[in-house]
Image 1 (tube, one colour):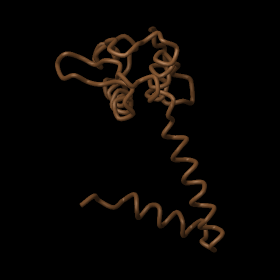
Image 2: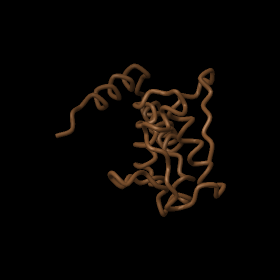
Image 3: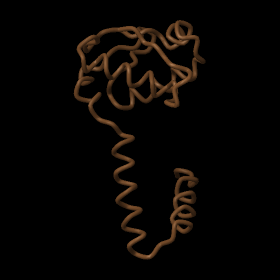
Length: 126
């Protein structure tokens, strides 16, 4: 699997990494249990900040596409093929679109929706 990022692309670099890892899993280029480069190694290879690669890896791990095994490294998750088909951004967008439409039908203004959304997003978890 060769990862290439386009710094001129409007797509964030971490999102490009996520997409390429998912594509490699879907195509079979990466199979469950296959190792991935370390965060530091991939960042060096691509001339990226470690935090960019770490963010991509964190989101891929959250989505069960990869799994970190401590000091042993990072590997393709056993359920990666199915998990790589799930797009949480698409799911969130669809749910928010439906919710906003329902709120507008109830008479809420854009401003009221934005203020409520910001307030909810700024709440600290207890």
